[in-house]
Image (cartoon, rainbow, N blue to C red; front, top):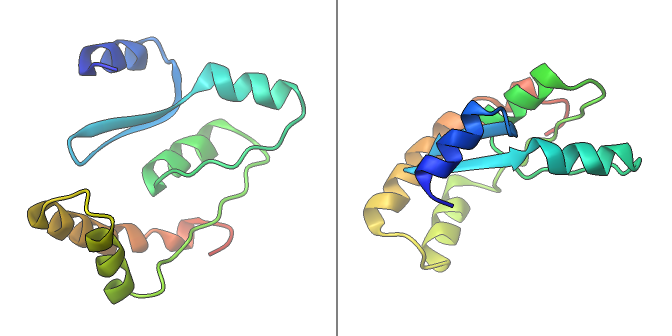
Length: 110
């Protein structure tokens, strides 16, 4: 999806949650989630703390789980092992991970 299309969808309130992270937009379709919930199905979303904050503010009966990495060393290894990012990007991701972890107390479980 293009950035302009994503931004247009934001303006139309098409996302239940969204965030701009590492130069990319990420979001969860409001319509898709509503359809699943209307069918009585529970949903698990794999989203960051920004998205979780948005969802907790918009929906009732939400439970949140913060999954911590085993250690910084293990997280660093995983980022290198997947071979998707440059060293510069990995450093940014590691720095952001430290910030992200500070939000664990906002969750029901971790």
